[in-house]
Each structure stands twice: as structure tokens, then as C-alpha cells.
Image: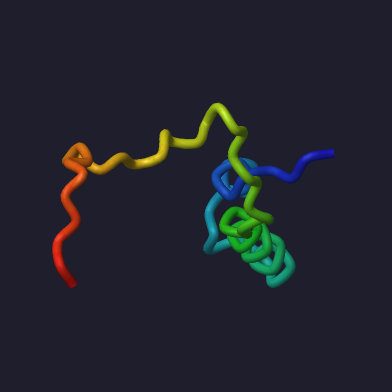
Length: 65
């Protein structure tokens, strides 16, 4: 069973001025769960950008250093 979104909860429960304490508790958890960050999923190999290439081609010249 999926949880309702905060907007769905408000639509079903009506005016917040008539809510009981438990309604606010539930609503608070729904809002918090909306912003939970899950583990980062690594991109698929095809989704990775191509490696950057130097815009200047090699000249064979090495500066003294």
C-alpha cells in the first residue's frame, strides 16, 4: 500500500482548522517522507558523459620546465 501525498491527505481531511493532533502528526510524516533522499544509484555506462579532451592537439613540443 502506498502512502498518500500531502496534497491527497489534505484533500481527504479537509480544512486544517478542524484537524486533530493525530492528523497533524500523519501529515508531518508525509511531508518529511516526500524529501527523503535515497541511496545514489550509479549511472549506467551509456549515461556517463564522454571523457573530456584537451581542445589543443598535441604538438610534440615540450616546454622547458
